[in-house]
Image (cartoon, rainbow, N blue to C red; front, top):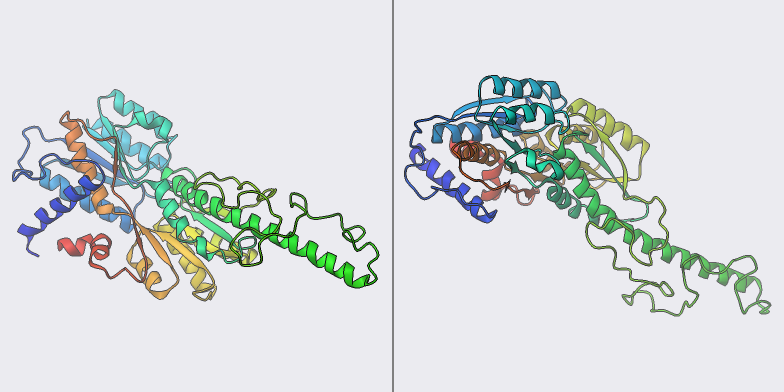
Length: 427
């Protein structure tokens, strides 16, 4: 595709995205999008980490938008997602340089409140990218551009529930890339909301059915031990009756009839999605969890690898693994590869899609990737930052969406466009 025709295509793509997400890009249909402004706006974009392909794509989108709309762009990344001081220094530099807008992916929502408040006091407008403030602090920024991270975690959760073949004993392990960045905490929260509310009811049903079967087996054994019928009218001495919470009538529907086990009272349909609690009638599940454990790697591949290997060695009940960003996903995959797991042993879901992740997906080590659109994040961030700097109103939340990518759909044209925007743009 020739350069002259690429950018109109991208503008059309972005306009389409804006329509789908409920927002409108003013001027999408006009021919003078690139007209140079008399007062060139100064926009600072601060990413989360160096050396990550995701942030390379964000930078490319940011630079393309700045070039197209004639903004002065200053793009920088912190050294790593644990580098909070580095982000604070970059914010302070933007204040000294009298930026019009700061767009930042927060590495720590609490630590960055004070420096960003200082920027606002200096007349600088604030936007967040990819990682946002908590909802109660949303007035600290004009807009958020990125993925709805809670929903993206729910998407990951919905794609693993079938991997719980034994809902009582099968467990998930979560390797989070941060304990403080909202991109990590929201994804984990979304994932947990789905698997806990889905698997806990199933585990409750399985536990109730097992208790009934045990009581029936005990009664049958007692009857065989006492063929003359002594005490045959009730349960064997010391049996104590049916399990707590299970009604005595064992008549019920026959096995396989589609209803709850005989004698089990209550709605077995489970809590509504996100409710997190046990369903009525599931019995006391105590501290039951569908998640065996969660660890944090601070965005470091080697840490993610080491922690994953240790956890999987200590917890053979783990059948599902979630990794919440590029670095954590690569560490998890390296661990699984080194431990010689078979593809069917674990269901592994990661986030983002650099070249190595795609290779792991094709090799069957990864079962799915929750893929964001980092190029559009960067492009739309700068576009809307320019609108904000010009005094225009913009939407408070600009959702750039996610796509669930598997080995089956990865070669589709629309997926390839998201995975490799540089190739599409001829960069």
